[in-house]
Image: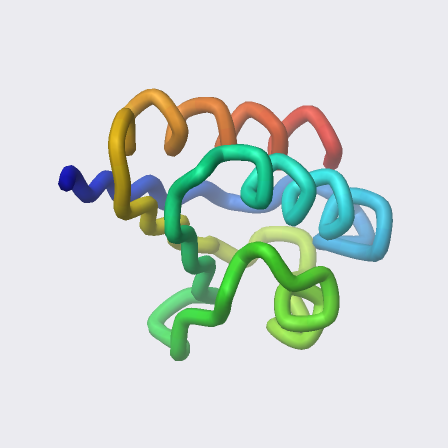
Length: 88
């Protein structure tokens, strides 16, 4: 099993709100991998939970780190970053 990590900066004036959190959680659920997301140096939360993602309180300019464990982790990580960037 592989692990991939990506760190990105959120460039949405309202941060990660309900719609991007839902789109990201849906993509995670369909990935077949175990995925966590963390704000800055904070604790990671399950990325398949909209409430957990929104509970991070990610604002414009904050960095988030996405960690993917599973088959095709690199590809899944890239796809999830694209999902999050497109949703913002």
